[in-house]
Length: 246
Image 1 (spheres, rainbow, N blue to C red):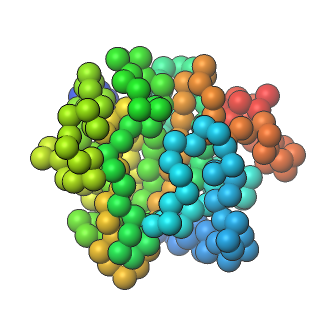
Image 2: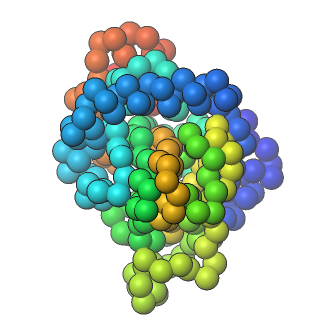
């Protein structure tokens, strides 16, 4: 499903834009559902994420979170079943992978900054990639609203950010910002150096991350523990396998 050029960019830079995979109507419906969940869950929003021993980041005060979206409505199925996204994940991880977690993150006004990091326990991949992410933009990502920063090519680095930078919170000279309209989707090899930036606007900057790992790795969220019969019954066996709930 990915073009030759898209595959080459993903391999070389560690990330690639897949274009706008969600329509304006889909983005609006997803944001409406998220607002309902945020109101319903209140202070417990995202609690599933931070209960897991495999989460690499502590609870963020600078961002709103939701977790376990797999079980919170069929509207979220597209985030781990879209053929083009799965093709991109396969290009990084090979044929044997599973969904690690499906979460919502919204950088709050004046907040949201993250240090440059990788998503594999601060270990170097050495070409054997174990984790890969897709970020689905639910707002336009622009220069000043907390867009994700990525340092192209660093998925092939023999060093980690904190080993070569004096301060991993500062901008990297080679970093780029993901900037694209709402509905766009980016695949990025999670061994590439990346992090959120500060949202310098007065509105949330919203996104959903469908995060995948190699089959031999633990999931951030144990899908077998959380899967509901309602969710399982609506999914083809192919997608149950991706969730690792068979």
